[in-house]
Amino acid sequence: MNVLVPLPVLLPLFGAGAALALSRHPKMQRAITVAVLSAIVVLAAALMVRADQQGPQVAWIGAWTPPLGINLVADRLSALMLLVSAVVTLAVLLYSIGQGLTDDDSEAPVSIYHPTFLVLVAGVSNAFLAGDLFNLFVSFEMLLFASYVLLTLGGTATRIRAGTIYVVVNMLSSTLFLISIAAVYAATGSLNFAQLAGRLDDLPDGVSLTLQLLLLTTFAIKAAVFPLSLWLPDSYPTAPAPVTAVFAGLLTKVGVYAILRTQTLLFPDSPLSDLLMWAALVTMVVGILGAIAQSDIKRMLSFTLVSHIGYMIFGIGLATEAGISGAIFYVAHHITIQTALFLVVGLIERRAGSTALLRLGGLARLAPLLGILFFVPAMNLAGIPPMSGFLGKVGLLQAGLEVGGWLAITLVIGGTATSLLTLYAIAKTWSAAFWRTPEQAHDIAQSLAAPDPEQDSGDSGARIVRHRGHVHVGATAFGDREIAAARRVVDDESSDRDLHQLLRDGDLPSRLPAAMVGPAAALVGVSLIFTFLAGPLFRYTDRAAEDLMLRSPYLEAALNPDDTRGDPDSGARGIGGDG
Picture 1 (cartoon, rainbow, N blue to C red):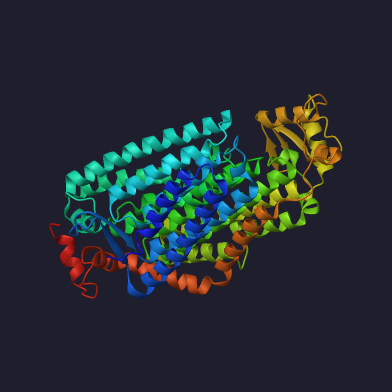
Picture 2 (picture 1 turned 90 degrees about the vertical axis):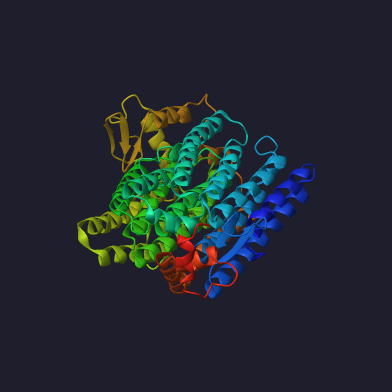
């Protein structure tokens, strides 16, 4: 048994118990949580090296004779996901400690925050290492429990509503997952991935297709693939900044990972590749159009999150080594970029009092470092050369061109258009929040609050047009909610103020806490590593994709963990075995 494999799951669970027992000692809770997450980073790095050099690492839990019992498998794909998730969660935890989130009992009781965060980390690790469907289901339930607690920290009405939406959607997803598991077991007599890889091939085509559709639908909800993504933009932005960051960066990728694992290992000759390609295209386009329409930075990033899930599904749908490699690279890149951006948005909210574009302006001059921290990952997200976002998209688009055909070419065109529209959405946000002056933003709020905004453009100089219930100011559209907010801002009797008024009244913090800026800056730096090490990382994802397409490295290691790793025929024997 490889003792390193279960540790990324066991350590956070033991740490959660210890943190809960030490609920009256916040400093010791922080020390335990940081130590556990730091240890997981080291373990994940060691597993990644061993998986790359020696093949998949397997651990059977409970001393059952394989293939009975629960197995955890760390191959190149899962080890990379484990390392990236460990780095991201450590940065988020340090950020939340710096924010003082865990010190404020009304916002985030320390006795709850640290144990719940560690359970979340254990669920993510278990999902990446799970060697069977039921263990993957257990991982999703661990994530659901921890997510609901973290989303509703503070117990505000907005967060309770968002948490309820999240729970209802995920309960439906869990129910569908249970039905899928029952159907898979009834048809094959096993839930182990390695055994299923052989037994599903022997099923009638209709049964196999039904099982695949059930699993794909379940994982598509987790991954926020359109149209199963409608819950996400309303659920994530309401949570505290570090919680939103880890959710947006990481949790949807667990769903993408599950799709990638099942499509390559269980359904390698999938008849649903075209369906995945269509879903990828619609997800990209609808997501980015939603992002353009937003007037809040958090919601804009939430929609870009949905949109860029489409790139990953595109790579999986291509079902080629180049496509899978590009998808793996893009998942790793996007986890760090999206998390870093949401951490920086948390800094914006702390510095300027809001993330609504209506209330922001002049941040580039007010907080230049904040401008740099936002600009770098935002340009990376948009895919500006030579950053890793550009390289990941080029890898996927090249894979699409190699496949050819009208559908793949359509995806290439759609992916290129989505990248350009992402740049437009980012540029619009940058112009409003960082470039214009706070006075100009306040003038626009005054114009919106006027009885007839088209007739009263104030001193902003912006062109104001009313269309279909929205007021368009330049490239930004404001709905009834934003117009009502504008009226509160200009109302002298209201306490609701924008950045211009906060600066005038001297009610803003003079500087951001270094303990918050440090982890956010470090994660932005980590995201740049993907650019500087893109060559070696692409070679690694190429090897991971080759393993996934061959299937034999995973199957040989999972079915014959002791002595048949090097036997090329052992995997085939094990697949057809009775188990």
